[in-house]
Image (spheres, rainbow, N blue to C red):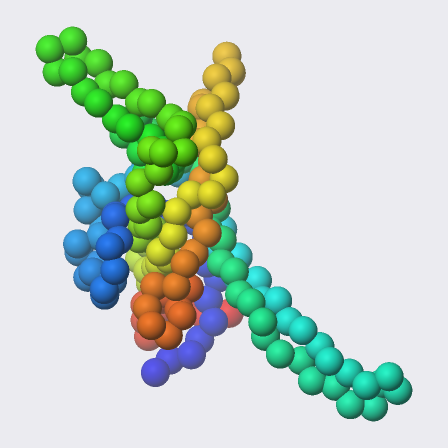
Length: 186
């Protein structure tokens, strides 16, 4: 295996697919046009944050630190979207379409309308020289939805997905990268 470091440049594509449990599907089943959430603006970020507890004696001579909690948050801005996109971002969203009138209606709100769905969120950053990077979590948008219309700025829907364990080991994120022998290393 080659362990060369690389400089990662560029944004990527964002896919979302309902997840009902079991194994994460193959890349080809997730990374399809029908699962593309929208083109993103402003890039994306994934944050892993551990919480720890430290116990120590009064004199500071002995101590132990233990990991007590982990959180993973994936954030991005969705620049291309439609009413159906909002269904993946709001647990209480309901979408109906009237083909004869060519109208899509989205209703948001009503706690009784929670669907309880979790999603596979897959970010793919492709680089033909350095290789592809994939970040996969299972979770849901916890940021809510803000739609702002301005005369000189596109409306971008910000999303913040909080990860839930995606397997029996408690895995919160899967980070995969291509290992290319010819990749430029630092």
